[in-house]
Amino acid sequence: MISERRFASAFTSFWNQVLPRAETYLRRVNCSCSRYDSEMESSLPVNRDRRSMVNELGFRFFKENHEGRKLTNRKVKEIWEVVRTYILRITRSEDTIIREPISKGELSEALEIANSLALFFSGNGEGSLTFWPEFPGCGIIHQCKGDILQGRRLVEVKAGDRTFRLTDLRQVLTYCCLDFASKKYDLLDIVLINPRRGLFHETLITKLVTECSGTTAVDFFSNMIEFISSEEPSR
Figure 1 (cartoon, rainbow, N blue to C red):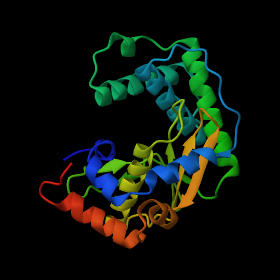
Figure 2: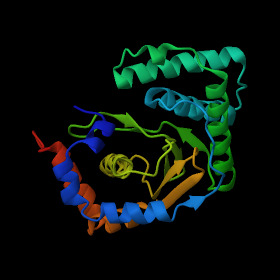
Figure 3: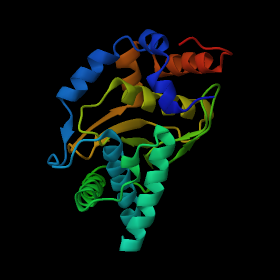
Figure 4: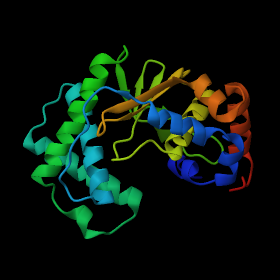
């Protein structure tokens, strides 16, 4: 079995077949994202793993603040250690740069990301936030977790210094497929948000599927379930 991230980045033949219009859709999205905050300016050296750690730290800071917990120095250190362990696990890297302590600049940047997320949710949507909503596994895909659930809206945070990518669309569609199979949340729409750039894109799942695949959501997710449930799906 594999993770939803692995599934989104692999199986290129499958994705190209079921999402023939995805690149066109994504280009349009990246040219017309909604802005809710100014873009962050970073003077930190660009290292992929350290940037991932700062992004994850910012997300967890937002979660702590939203749930009413104070970010004491001790709490910051505890969260940093959790983040470092998490990044080491998903990258499977022994790079010493991951083990270096957090810098003042990185801490400041993580707090900016947390504040940006707080700003977004203060003016977008209603309902309580559920962090890391769980999606039951199906076929070759393990049980997995999204970022934030707000009512029937799934919000995925992509805090890189980049535009949204095809793998981002594939990942949220994978969550939507697992929800379609389990009927757990009855998701209605999705949001891709980049707190580093102050941009977001929101759309109905039915519209996303139709524009990217040319088929209905029911047909798309049914075909996807059949594919991931086959014994040896083709990559």
